[in-house]
Length: 229
Image (tube, rainbow, N blue to C red; front, side):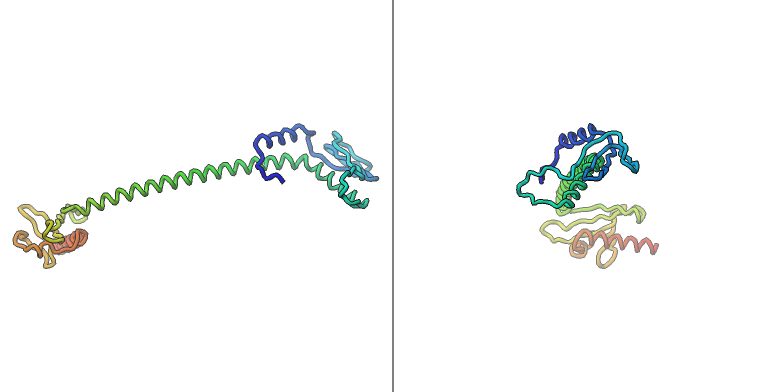
């Protein structure tokens, strides 16, 4: 069996031969005495048949020149003649149907291949986008690591603002959080609100381990103060 895919040209040639053949349907009629005829638009009449056109005739004793072929019995020979006749008669409908099915499957395969290619292209695009976002995230993390001060607006708390500052290099790694106010401000420490920031020691002012903690604590303190007022 040839496993090489059929080319579009070969498929077109098959369709051309099928279209050039006598239009179907074809039928098979068995005569007594070991004869089968294939004809187009065959209709049995009870004492023979009528047809638009005769196609082929099968004899009970076909020529067999294969020396390796064993001698068949008359029954086996007649069975083979009938099988060949049925195959030939049905080929008129089967060949165009198979050609159409091949074309349909190839069209489906082309759609699947297009969808697969689009998927892989999308996947590659997403991979590049993830790599780009990771690079941006690394850059942002580096900027955050170098940041020494944040200003955090709190719209949900009436537009209040928190100012978060990191302790100066060489002095420690603590963070302070304060609420700027006209003429100064107040700091939130582990001891509560301190109204005079300048009077606080470094350890008391920069008492939070990192910026997220300082922001979280300051926000909670402002929210609690708002509930009390």
